[in-house]
Every structure is written in C-alpha cells, then in structure tokens.
Amino acid sequence: MPRVVGIDHLVISVGDFKRSKAFYGKLLGFLGFKLESSYPDMAGWSNGKTLFWIAAADAKGKKHKHRKGDIGFHHYAFELSSRQDVDALGAFLDKHGMTVVDPPGEYYDTSYYAVYFTDPDGMKLEGMVYKPRPKPARAKPRKRKT
Image 1: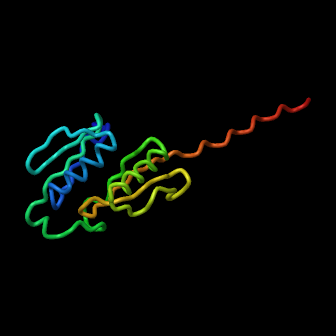
Image 2: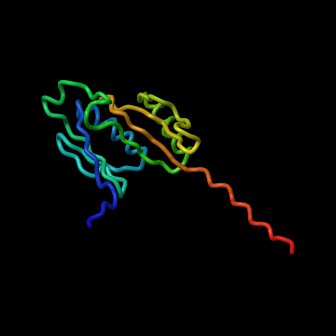
Image 3: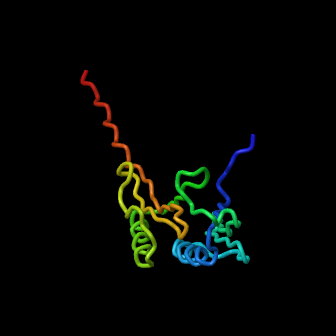
C-alpha cells in the first residue's frame, strides 16, 4: 500500500502577485527558503525539504478576498525549532509592518508556542513549535524487606 512520506509542496493563489511575491520573498528568506523558480504568474521557494509556491489568482478569483472559513485553505503553519525562533519571527513581522493576529505566546497548552499572522490577502499563517513536556520519571519500586 502506498504511504505518504511528507508534503512536497503547497501552492496558494494570491490576488496581487507582485505584492505577494515581495511579501513571501521577505518572509521565506527570513525562514531559510531560497527562491527556486520564478515565472510571470508563479514563484516557488524551497528550504531543501518543502516547496512553497504562490500563483496569481485567475480573474474570477481576484474578485473576492480570502475569507477564513470558506472551503479551501485555512492556514499554513511553519514548524520552527524553538520558542526563541517563534519570538524572532514575531519581531521580524513587527519590524516589517506585517499583520500579526496573535503575538508569540502559548496557545492550547504550555507545549504549543506560536505566532499567528496574515499575508497581503488576509490568509492566515503561523510560526510554531510544539514540544511536549517530558513525562515525569516513574518512581522505582521499593524493594520489600523480607
């Protein structure tokens, strides 16, 4: 039986290709991606494992903005390696005037640390780290005195 071994790429449609290419170029460059392919209406960045593509929406698609809750794309989470990386991403977003929806912090429980933000079309993005707390060590059974 075939098994999925990962997600190779993601392609999202954008309303203003030039504006989004600049946004994603800045963001993905900060996150360690390099522009791999660029066409008049499509661009793709890679970090060596994942490809992230944007493509210009068609004429009908450009007539309405993205709305979280519609069928389709909800949000994309970039998994980072540490809380410090999430904080650094939050500072980068602030420095570049990008829209932060929820600042770096704990969400859901103490193991999940994230920052939520949007792209120029209002699509939600996230930088996160999930590190469950280690389970407490089990007490060793005491030897019975005989």
